Image (cartoon, rainbow, N blue to C red):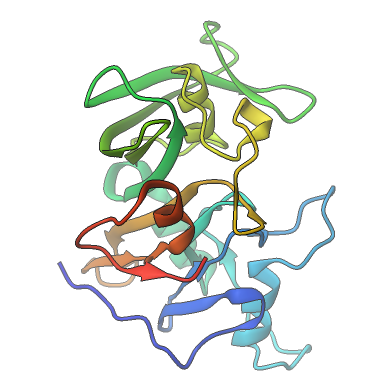
Amino acid sequence: MRKHPRPGDKHLPHGLTILYDDRDLLVVDKPSGLLSVRTPLDPSPTAHEILEDFVRKGQAKSRKRLFVVHRLDKYTSGVLIFAKSEEAKERLQAKWNEETSKTYLAVVHGHMNEPSGTVSSYLVENAQQIVHSTKDKAKGKLSHTAWRVLRETPNVSLLEVNLLTGRKNQIRVHMADLGHPVMGDRKYGGRECSVKGRNRLALHAWKIAFRHPHDGRPMAFTSPIPAFFTHLVGAIPEVGIDSP
């Protein structure tokens, strides 16, 4: 499978880095703390706005647009994809769960009872924008999350997590359901996580693989693991280390 190097000369505001850019796609490495897209409750800058300005080359009247293919939570870092046309977006989303492989890293509280497993539940969002599992099939959307342990310390575990479906806050809710919330995830039961004065969620969109919407060729991208994670669990062999 073809992998694309990240160009070191395409660093954008707020820590965004472009991993790949062609006529159909823009793939970036999003830092923790940056919104993917605008929300009614948060007026802070977004990756979508920064990147749309990039493709328009600063020309506000340009007709060039970026289309949202998927999202990452504000405090989740890693690989994020935008499409440059509605057609490319629709082609990617049409087989998103079937043809797209999404691998995350998560540092969770405690030790898992097994070396690997899969969590399945129906997820629903309430009026307070809190996602939770429900037994009511009519209200929730069936969701599956696979995980395996990569490393353990006395108090936490580093997991490789594969999203088999893509629901809002899915990993965070499923880890909390297991009794092992993601570190720094106070919304779903995790304690505040601070390393060298920096607080963030210990969740990282590490790898993504899919087929190009134009010609179907395999595409694969990897985001270097933030140093924040190595401060939590120690050295992680055979993978790159980025800034916090």
